[in-house]
Image 1: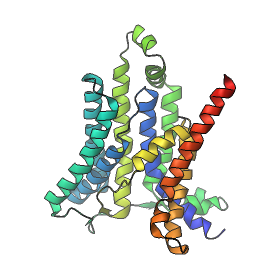
Image 2: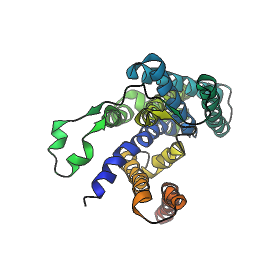
Image 3: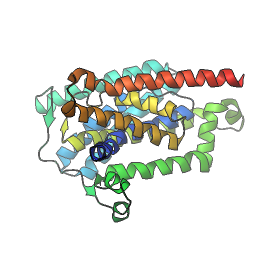
Image 4: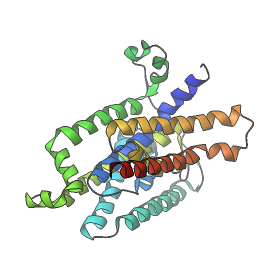
Length: 300
């Protein structure tokens, strides 16, 4: 049990970018648009968040500017997709490729380095210790001592639930995905809500991306390493529900944390260990697909 506590504690940090990206992707998915650009948006947030923190000397200002840059990219994606009626899959892939190339080019122009850029002078992430959590047996050790980003993500998840299911905006956004004609008949533009959904995904991905680099204190090319794609899987495994997103993100975070632990604890080739989260993702999607088909067959 003792060796599990560090893994579980680490999984809470690892799953947070997945949860934040999946939250934004949930809004676009419910509005009727599958946002496959989560990977690129996360990467843009990761790069801009640490870059602006470095140049401004303020983590708060750096993260806010990083979020704005990510929202700008998501706004361009939304405009091209919704207003110019480009294929959402093509524009999403283009966004991922654009972010991957742009971050490397800017890194080289600013620091003369196409590889890892370490920022020793930036402030470290503040760690919060909430006394109420410390009193919880076993789980207290898992949930205390994390950065403010982690606790903020839990708050945002609650806000996500309230907005989607307890407000007129959430009802109309979901109607844009389920009953577009009904929403249009009431004089409301479905694309307006989809555009806002893209902006929300830019906000959450900007925050999640900033956590990746600020937690490391460095920028690594393609630091997201497929986390945006895994966030898409989280959306569907979570049954497109906020609570489901949390559960699925925790499971994937644990798989990733276990692979990190296994590199030093198990006598297994490193390539195999590093593949654990992605193999788990594939198996989860296969299992979900089989379950969905069997459920549909049973209902029919």
